[in-house]
Structures are given as C-alpha cells and as structure tokens.
Length: 195
Image (cartoon, rainbow, N blue to C red; front, top):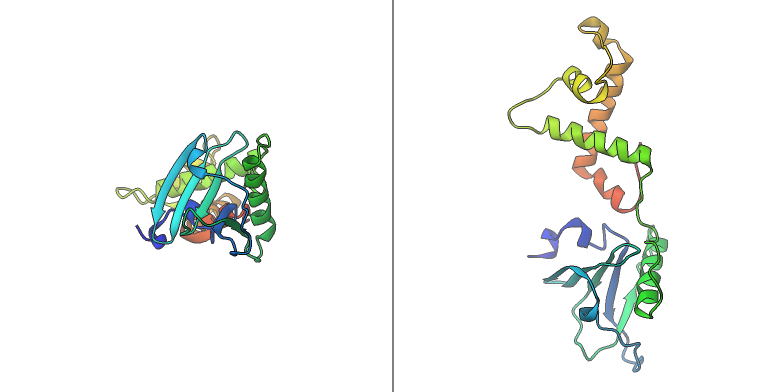
C-alpha cells in the first residue's frame, strides 16, 4: 500500500493530531528511551512506503503516530509542522510524550468532540447520503424530507412543496451532505464543523 492509498486517519496532512516521529539530529546522543512496540494496546499498525503508521489505544483517546523510516539505533524526535493546525499538532505530541514518560491518561487535545446537536446533524447528513447513494432508488427531495427530515410532520405537495421553507432546508441539507462526502469530511479531522 502506498501513502496515497492510506486511510485518512493515518495521513498527518489530514489528521493534525497525528504525531510525526523522525530521526533526531546526531548531536542528541542520549535520547529518552521508548519503544512503541511495547505499548499496551496497539489498535492499528501498518508499514507503508513512507514509514510506520500506528494507532495506540489509551484511556484518554487514541494516539495516531507516524514513525518515518528510522533505524532502531537512531534517536527519535517529534516533528511539529508549522501550519494552521500547529496547536493541535503540539498538543498531540505533548500528550503522547507525557504518556511515554509515565503520566496518567489525559483527554485527547484538539480532537473533534461533536456536541449532541452536531452529532444529530452529522447523523442526518450521513442518512441523507445513504439514501441518495442507494443504487436502486433515486429519491426526490420531497421523499428525503418525508423519510428523514420531517418524519412526523405533514408537508405539502406540488406547488406548496416547491415554495416551502421545508424544501429549501431539505435542499440545503442535501447539498451539505454531498459536500461532506466530496471533501468537507476532511474538516472534521481538523475539528471544524462547517455550516
């Protein structure tokens, strides 16, 4: 598998909570020793052409780690890219470093934790996508509204439907669901919920 085929949860460019490890400069001869193979709960471990990608289980939330190709004899260093997610990257490295040093689990810093409203909305958008992506049926916006958005409400048909606020809201939600599918899902990995 190439890095381009890797799941989004392994790509540090998309998931800023991924801790990137690389070889430390040779001047740092006495590294703090740690061996990720001895982590108590390795949830995922995959070696790709660009290095080793791991998800380490922890009571405070998983640690996503990308260990670039480094020989075991080299010291490791955290790579924190200076971009718009630098604080998330810094907190993720600090959280992993504290755990490696023996500190108790802490909550995942910078992770996306949707509010109850956001969870309901995201679930609704996924339901809309499921319904619209079903090969056998291509439901109309009216059918989507009736089946998913306004289940217990009476909504008009014909001209009444075409000029209704329910139709406008349904079309907005369908558009948002499609944008989520075609790329906006990446913003969720950064902890951002769009409109």
